[in-house]
Amino acid sequence: MLADSIKRSNCRIVYIIRNPFDIIVSLWHFLRFMDDRSVEDHFEMFCRGEEGYGPFWDHALGYWNMSLEKPSNVLFLRYEELKEDPVAQTKRLAAFLGFPFSIEEEKTGMVNQIVDFCSFNNLKDLEVNKTGKNPGSIIPNNKLFFRSGKVGDYVNHLSPTAVERLSNILEEKLSGSGLTFK
Image 1 (cartoon, rainbow, N blue to C red):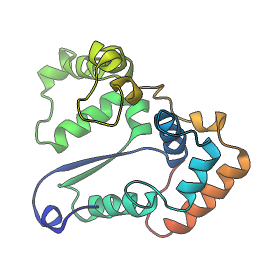
Image 2 (tube, rainbow, N blue to C red):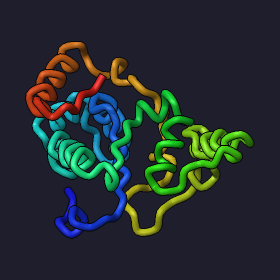
Image 3 (cartoon, rainbow, N blue to C red):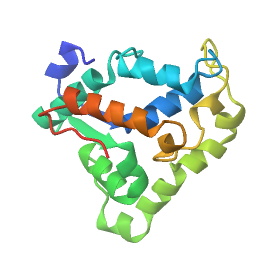
């Protein structure tokens, strides 16, 4: 996914990845305004690698490998880790970007203020994200970007057989890379 000019540059890239099982469900909910395909249809497309940016595993491995090769240039963050420990991940992000929090900033609660301000629920409740629209976009309104933000919601939408099937595909496609999903 990265152009050679980006790979050779010293720019910093923050790549946030989500568990692929939750990606399928999230994408299904997001695209329901455009088509009436079932979650099973989206699952099948995902398993075949028919995604807007190519197969998920190719995309994810590209950034994963770059984060291993150039850790000072590519930060690989997992959405689930952001949800689990937003303070630690915010500090990690700030340090990566070259702006670590000072001891004073940490003592005064600045990290927690930023975490609260950038939380899913706060962003979801902003008026622009409830009623705003992006002119010229095929996306009818901004609220489509904010549904639930929950980790593990896939268990409510994908059958155990589907989960096992995708687990096997991911194991094969990501084999030997060190990239895994819980």
